[in-house]
Length: 392
Ligand SMILES: *[C@@H]1O[C@H](CO)[C@@H](O)[C@H](O)[C@H]1NC(C)=O
Ligand SMILES: *[C@@H]1O[C@H](CO)[C@@H](O)[C@H](O)[C@H]1NC(C)=O
Image 1 (cartoon, rainbow, N blue to C red):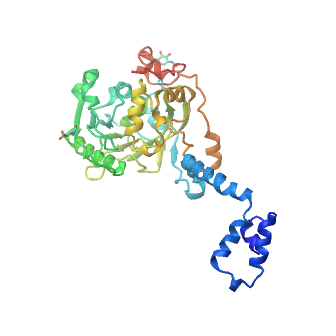
Image 2 (image 1 turned 135 degrees about the vertical axis):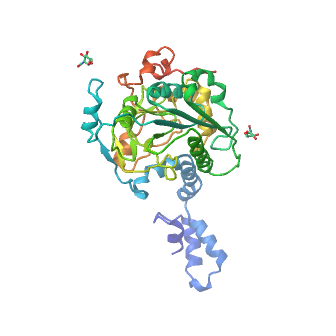
Image 3 (image 1 turned 30 degrees about the vertical axis):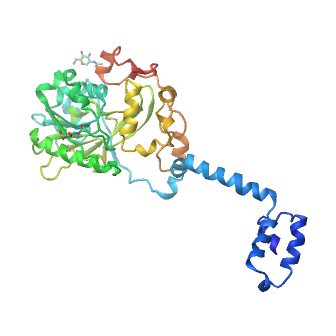
């Protein structure tokens, strides 16, 4: 009985402990003292079991420590249900089709004059992408509203990067409402709290910029760029939904790595004072197909990647300091791998497995922002075949 308890797996019983077992365990169990019972158990455990306890178990624990996040992501389909699917509105566009017909194709009428449009962003350090965004949108924007803080969401001090580069943005100067907000620098707080705080300040800045009812308001991160024709359509057509999410093509590092088309966080609102609140989560069930580009981590310099990785609301993903090693970052970029060595955030095993591994290279530079192609030399790092980044 003793050997069976110690052995655990029904293996053979070592000869010596066998004897001890039979002497100790052979007696009535009530007469066996606790100590000798333990000794009996320990001796009954064979070598393989000791190896198991002292080598395999710690290795398993170390493995879970290294890959715990991957394991929880992989098992996500078991603990989280996918959100309700969007009602996707087909999107019609060709530059040679009249606005009246485009509105009609979407089931909307055309207005006598276009709505005013406000583009509001929280800025961190995405200078290049901001330039592409504003060049793309500027024919149709009434006021560009930009807020920057001297704190990252993770409560680190941040230089005022926009302020330092403001002269690059002269082309919007007469339509720019710029705001700066001091960070609260609460160490150890959830980064989403600082982010929410900054979004509330952006609501105030929009009122200062003069937004009024039924003006269009674009709510999106800097790197979520609606295409110009999408915004033109929405400002000209009447009866568009009051809150409409934009489906964007997801790119990583540059337009060479087209990950999928499932970006949906950007939204366009018909502003209602007292009701519209600046947010970056799901606010309605309608999604307009193929409305622009979401280029994540599309930076010119390796140092910008490192800054963003640290400033990010998901700083917990930087689990090991070697993730911030410039050589590693450069090699990850060229391969289209994940900077944080994470699994895809999906809700079914089929999608997780389908998206595991590197993003395949794309050789298409068709339907990209016009300013990018007009200035291809300056923005080479965003085009296919140019994954090397500046190291300074
Ligand atoms: C598009 O319209 C322009 C002028 O409006 C015209 O010259 C051109 O031929 C049209 N292109 C196509 C492909 O229909
Ligand atoms: C951030 O800005 C606020 C308001 O201008 C200022 O009081 C504070 O000293 C600044 N903090 C840092 C770390 O720059």
